[in-house]
Length: 142
Image (cartoon, rainbow, N blue to C red):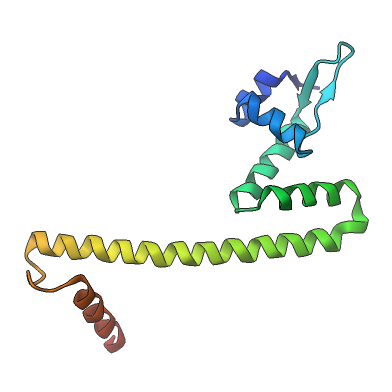
């Protein structure tokens, strides 16, 4: 079995040792201890932490992560609760994605508007608001 000391583990998962210790304090990661009470981690810990990082990447809060970890530790009896939690997080992530897509669309329109000004393909006196209205009208006619 391959084991990793905290520095090796930190390098393997791309986090600092400080962050790993914080995750330990928060109960998200439980290191193993050897006969000298030195912490070590295994490949299973790598997989677990990568999963936690995926959850975190969806926007899952520390509180939600801690709840998930506690429920998981309680076993299969909490599957329904974990499912509800994960559905809630997924819904929140989808809402954030939609908001980001909307914001990105406005940004891209602004870029196109500026590019049109530079290329002289948009009238010099056309405001961004007028440009958006024109795009909206063109879209409705398509």
